[in-house]
Amino acid sequence: MSPHTKSVRVGVLGTGAIAQVSHLPILSRMRGVELVGLADADRAKAKTIAQRFGVPRVAASAEELLGWDDLDAVVICTPSHLHQEHAIAALEAGKYVLCEKPLALTSAGAEQILATPGADQRLVVGMNQRFRADALTLKPFVSGGELGDIFYLRTGWFNRRIGRGRLSWRQRRARAGGGVLMDLGFQMLDLALWLLDYPEPKRVVAHLHRTPGMEVEDSAVLLLYLEGHRVINLEVTWSLQSTRERQFLSLLGSAGSASLSPLDVTKELDGELHDVTPPLSASRENQYTASYRQEMLNFMEIVRGERAPTAPREQVTLLKVIEAAYRSAEEGRDIAL
Image 1 (cartoon, rainbow, N blue to C red):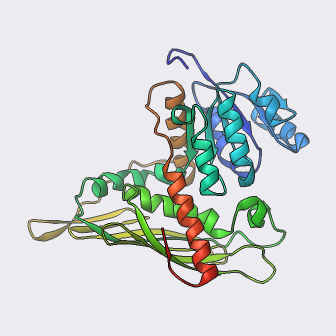
Image 2: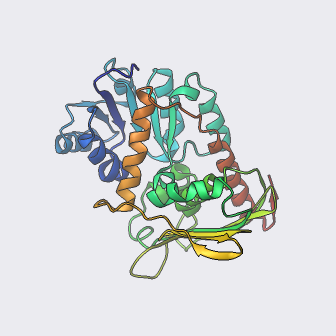
Image 3: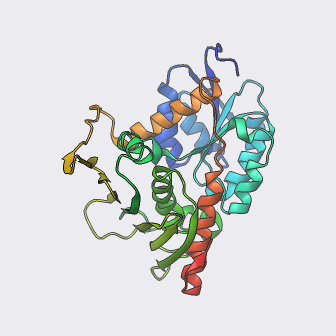
């Protein structure tokens, strides 16, 4: 797409929670973006959502939407088991693609998508945790070696809002690929590996807990051993008995330490430890919404040709780790990668 084009014409596949809470509110108010259409298996719902956000057209199917000539880009918000099919179809249709996480349910599926012509130039995976203001501020400290050699990182997400009442597609193995590890764990593990510049994983050991009556695990713990004698400890749950959820990340280095949230960075300078935490700009938006907005701005810059794309090949690595973790839990042993 020419950078001189006045607006990016976007369609959205899937009108579930993530589309309604994040993508559609952001896209409908973003300068230089025109929301041209929606598609959902439940067309009646799609029509209602389209009216709410002022979207002019509703396609009868994904195939119809992807066939529109006046569509530059598509945001895929369908259930996870459809991501592979829809991402390949969108790339083959010549569209720029922002696909919600995970890119596919398996590493082989992700590899198939990445092998599709155009993936290197037009495919982005929606890993919004990377676009948090605190994570973006911490990243240069880690990548630049300012905290020395990072040898341990602990992260997790404890959530009590999921897994109550009627099961959604996220608690169906065939549609989600797994439980909390494929949901919250996928996001926090990616954030940890991204901060470390995605070192090569060596082996993993995992433990899963599944509440009776559920198809998938609602809690998970894993240790991931990386090249360079580094370790990531991941803990996630949908079943926290508390009034509020907890999301955390902390890391230890040979010359400092850091944590999120809140952002805290300590660094050794001239033999003394100093708090070098940079101030974050005040924002009326919550961190969740702001991260999705920044993610979408990044995608629009790629569509306009203002930012060079990077093929999301780390998705294959991430899915291989997740697959090994499930195997570890099933077999009760470490799994080499």
